[in-house]
Image (tube, rainbow, N blue to C red):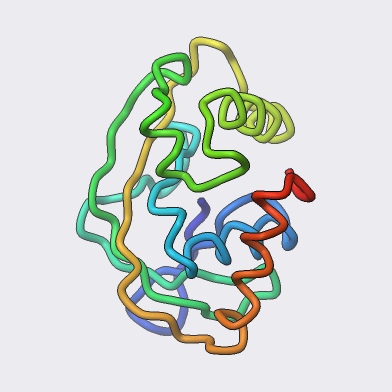
Length: 149
């Protein structure tokens, strides 16, 4: 998740590293199956418990308002099946989580087996974009069918 300041008092958060991934992850949040995320421990600014922000689509629309509940520093290798499932991605398994996140962190030049990550849980406070929300269940169906990784 990356953050940037906007003209309002809330930061704008985009999940992933490209428009397609941002939309996919935002859809999982909007349908309620993604309640956590994980980032490289060097992310700036780091997530802060209690902070609220706008969830952004891949094309820069404000989709929802989220509030960070918890932030836990942990080793990549210490991820558990239960925590991986909170991310709501793929088949919800630890194997899927490890594969997808190893690929993501490698693509972004920060992966190392011993790396620290920040595991963050959040609450969906309000959906702001009804059109995006209406299309979100289709993203979930594709995710579960394995059509998207």
